[in-house]
Amino acid sequence: MRIRALSVFEGVVYHCWPIDRTHPERPTLEVDALLRDGDADESSGPLLVTVSDYSVMVGDPQVAHRCVEGLRAKGRVVEWLGVEHISFPMWTRVSPGDTAGPALG
Image (cartoon, rainbow, N blue to C red; front, top):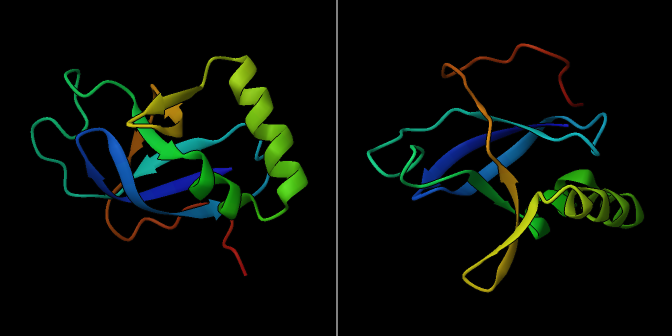
């Protein structure tokens, strides 16, 4: 699953949507957002997407649960401010308007 982040603040993704829903067990993050100091650098750590946002993007509750449990087993689910998030220690910066890859429809 390819997730596009549209806004990030202090390491937390606040707005995102799925670019490609295939392979939800292997989510990747692409960032198309204005980033300021502290938003997505070494001081902020990995970027975080809430488990609830991720589950909505997956679409099927059973598939989402299975994928989240698999990510949890790999240490990718973390708690931040009392909310579970999927951690993205690696992500890709993309240019505005970059729509490479399969489109959802």
